[in-house]
Image: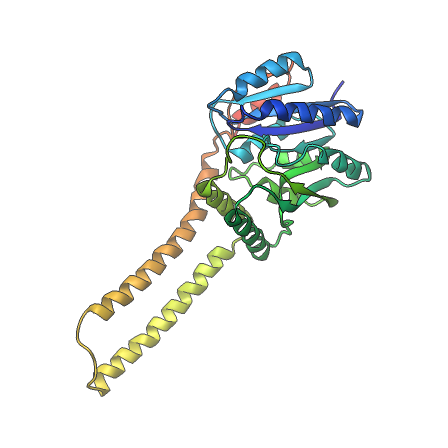
Length: 325
């Protein structure tokens, strides 16, 4: 019998917490009273995460493991989970237990009311630095102001989506994934549940500053062309002001005697404008890089092995992946 609920858990170096995550998820899903599956996606972990999950999967028929050949990224791991999930309702939750599994029952209740997307909104964020809280708040508001898609603020990937939403997301082939933005883009009837985000149960964050910046760029460039428009506006403004400055220089030279000889001012102006030009080229380069990624048409991920699936099950997914998924 197919599972009614699928819970997708992306993992990367979570050996310290994954056993506890499994136990809490198992307890919560047992309470729902319907068939379910727990789809753990190992995103190229370098510790014993995959080994632990293989053992759990061999003992529990609810547990399925998708093991990547290397690290492809958190958003890609979520995408793979959606590809393999068979439930009528699909839940995405991280393995670190910052998002309480007990909230899933509230999501299921909203889904039964007829909502097709139920996202979890954070009221508080325990165990995070002031820098992380402030930058996260600024990012969500910046993204909201720059895109035409209404992406809920103070939300992550912790959410429930209906089967029809999952099928639509599976059909989106773009390489630079920003799943929470894609869920907002596809629409459907959406609502929220509120919760308090807890401190990490164990281990270290998998989103250091470098990854956070990369993730923010993916979110902005995937759903907004405004940075390109800003680059055009800035370029036009600089050209106009430079033209006015040229008239000022000519006026000084021809009609006054207080021009200052030397190269310092020229070098200073050149450095300023060259720096701005390089910055604008960097913005354009971000979009060109994404066009390049899409044009290569490589598979989005490569699965080394699966555990808990019957022989031949999901072979069509592997064929889709070979064709560019």
